[in-house]
Image 1: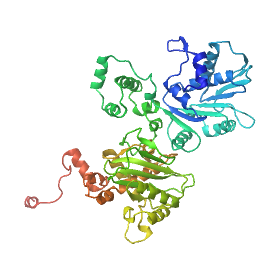
Image 2 (image 1 turned 120 degrees about the horizontal axis):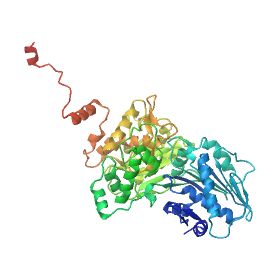
Image 3 (image 1 turned 60 degrees about the horizontal axis):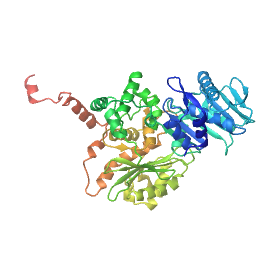
Length: 525
């Protein structure tokens, strides 16, 4: 159902089309979707130039014309963008279909409307401070990822917006990871706070498709480029020939810089935020699907699971439950070799997590459980052991004490479990969580040699998934009618045997001649 603001926009405002002709302002597919789903506290991350700012400029213009005492503010990232926005609002007002609005004050950055007592301010980030004494009814922060200091600037802006009646919309394309905007989006994606996250990829924009003849469509589909990931994208997203042709055109314009293309024109949320370092998980199979359903604020689950007779494994990373690091439980199916659930919370105490883990394990057919034993993990494990079948809990020793339970992360074990996760993701394992994929894409080897998330990012989901992979071999051996088919991919990729096998695969035979002397060698001395 169209909002009142949309009805006014489309009935009164005009914009220039690509040929410079005045046309009615009819919302495009992305603008329409956003208009329908606004909550009053919204974050928009998106492709380049889908018209988000144009929509908010139009929305605030009609609010100033129709609603008394509106105080609308739009803040841009640079002076040039601010001037373009001001010009756009002037265009709306000068070409309005109906009586010309009465403008009381038309200064460099502000318009005031005499009949409604409303005001519209458009400025540049940091140029004016807002705070106590100011009231903003409608605030739009444009391209906030490119602001010089978004955290400090928005702190004053946000305090000027009434908590219950004011509207805040934060919008930007991505600009790397670990920054204020990236953290804001990731928190919202996890259901933290009041803000609703809206993601718009290039498939959401109807204009990003070329019109082709039947012969041209056949030519495109008959010559899919593997290096450009076209067969994979057709399979995952059912891309039309016109979409593929448009993508090829944009890639050519960007000199086939895939990283830059995905940041400017993302298909998925994680593509908005490109890590500056090289991720350790460059090869993985992540399949976005509508079957990845949010069942609660903490739990996502793949539709169709759990299944009777199927076996599952749960890896866990334990946080303090104080609002900082997440506690995460990642669930995988041994039969389908895919991620089937993800539970995460930063507010559940470690002892309560034991009960939550047990409930999740029971739900997934008494899943095999491997929980990190470091720090708070021992508390979780002690509670888990009270209510969960002990033979389904990973044990590192045989002393019969609580110290046997779980798997410890150390300087020795961490590279091994990360290496196993890399091997599994590149050969056999499929994931569905965009949040896990995002963490994997920002998991790097730092300058000090440590394997961890890039600065400002999280790796709780990565560690939980790595824990699960560590327990795969034991879980497979526990299955009724043990399956050995997948055991080869579980071999430590950093072991000597693995290195030799890889060299054999590349060279056809081990490339180093035998160093063992034979009788013939001695005879020939």
